[in-house]
Length: 189
Image 1: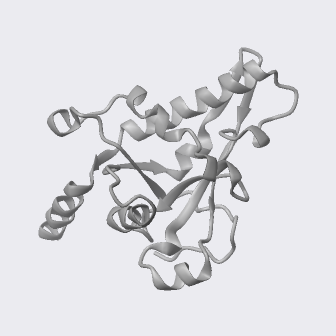
Image 2: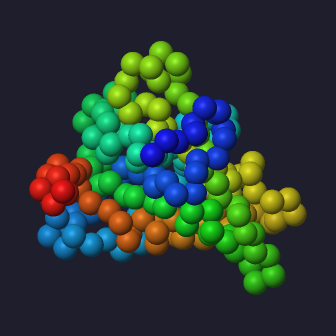
């Protein structure tokens, strides 16, 4: 599969999946299941996310970046990171989310997934760097539709986070399991 990631801020193709890393709940190893409410906070943009141009929630296109490579990028900034829960999100489903501010105000297409290029020196030297991308749109104050009250803005952002968390709860695994999943699929081929 060839991906067109030649332009910064261009949309990531619909058929792609993106991954994001999070801290697993304490009972995840035992239950192998996660509730959406346990993931809500991972979709709150960090101050770095909000300052970025354009503002985006960092994710990685799975075809170009393995979970281990994404984790290695995380370790460069946070050497003791415990974010070993890998969540997979289909780009097409992210874009289908309709934002709801109240009963009369709905916003289809309020989220997008775009390429967010890392610095060229990093992009050319680090495995997986070319998969860096970002979820943009209604998670950020500056990207919200005009005419909303502060309460409606807050409700809309919270709703979008909960919808992303629902998607994420359907497809997640621990980083250590990636090796097992890869080995299993290789044996089946």
